[in-house]
Image (cartoon, rainbow, N blue to C red; front, side):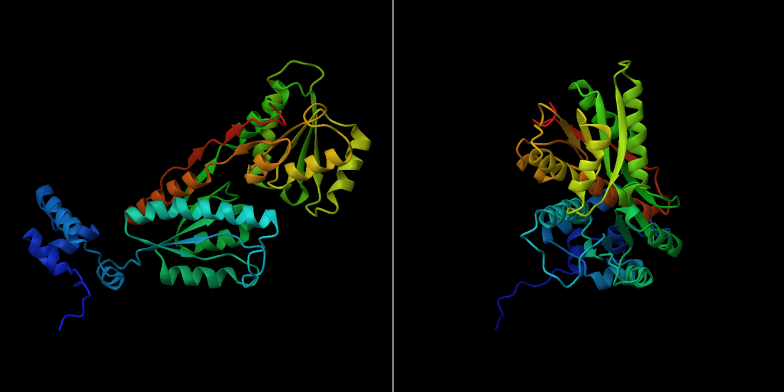
Length: 355
């Protein structure tokens, strides 16, 4: 009596449909020829048979045949406890997880085309880097490392381990790995230029003190400097202020900065939560935006469009960066040769705070 379950398609079925040997199917599908050469017409027959029958090779069989896991790991930083539920009452938490969804979707889109799995491997203080690297070596063919500046020492250990790596973001180290990052100097120039074009001449650049030495921030400041030199207005000047990340301390730090240097005509922030915090402080002090102060922020998220007035910002192509990183990592795994770094440019979204 039939169980009603459809019969699982095997490699033998594909071989029979394509009129080739099982060994030929295995080599063609796994790109493992070992001196074996198949004509293009034979390859196309095998691919057509796979599509017609809906064949999906088992992970165990692929690993035995190729020595690969057929999976890619995603390594990203987690700042809260791994066991704690997502605090949906916190906007910063919600948007942080929304950004992670873009990261995962970009990678998953690429891996789907290759019939590969995505394994999530979060970085957290309670989990040692050697432990994470050991897991990666045993379960995946390569690792996509998000936010490299979050833990440069851990990144160095990952590079030294020899595992195939794709790094998304401004890398503080060099090595044999795939690199997809943004043109931060161009981004800094673009953001500062927007403030200048909109009439700001006394500009304050606000940076979280914890990111003072970030490679991305240093490159952005180079872009800020270039934007200023592009203009010949003698009134144009800017100052850099490093502020606490603690939301309770930020208003006091900004108030002191304004007392010391006066209220600026423009503020450029380099932290994903800073623009909204700066806007709220200005409004609480009765300082109008954008009639008195114009604001542009980096690392745009949904809070930028939900504030009143809406905030101008630099939008990073997060999903596409991760899609490209996954593509390049797969090529790196197959060929053993890491490609040249790829640079992408953020997009300036001009809204009411500086338009």
